[in-house]
Length: 220
Image 1 (cartoon, one colour):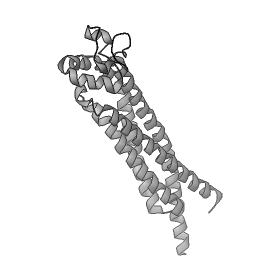
Image 2 (cartoon, rainbow, N blue to C red; image 1 turned 90 degrees about the horizontal axis):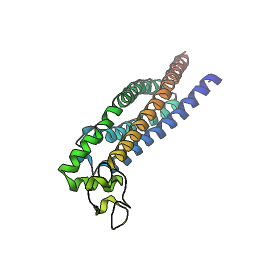
Image 3 (tube, one colour; image 1 turned 180 degrees about the vertical axis):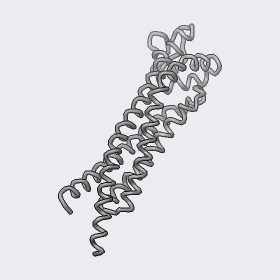
Image 4 (spheres, helix red, strand yellow; image 1 turned 60 degrees about the horizontal axis):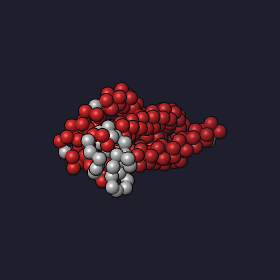
């Protein structure tokens, strides 16, 4: 093996270690967000909130498995494994860019709907709204003034008795900040991983071509 092939082989190997870590990162983010929103999905009445963390977990797990497959293909210099790996990486790259584009295009519009959704939930289901307040450490839709009372639910404060003086801020802002941070994080990670995946596809196909030529030379 020449110096070039040796370099490509180990660049591909370590790139897939990066993909494996990125996959675990997406998986971890998805799990963390799912645990955070599992109690309040119904109150938001939006499938996007439920689907987003689950999608992140699925994509993270798939990326991790394919990255492990790529590491094995690089070390063994298997033409079949490397070509298969490159095809899967191209598919994942397209899916990630599509996901990131959809997030960046629709995120602001979705965030703008939060005040309306929370206002309706605040009036319709006070008990569920208290679960939301506990999960996100917020109070009312815009703050303690939403209750028009000096005595607030315990979920509005870290300590009791709960009053406007020691209450959290409004849930509208907390929820918008949370969704904005989560959406941007997923989008940026997806684009970053997709860019590196493009390089991995190039290296994978180059190494696959080297492995194929090596097998042909071994027959003669």
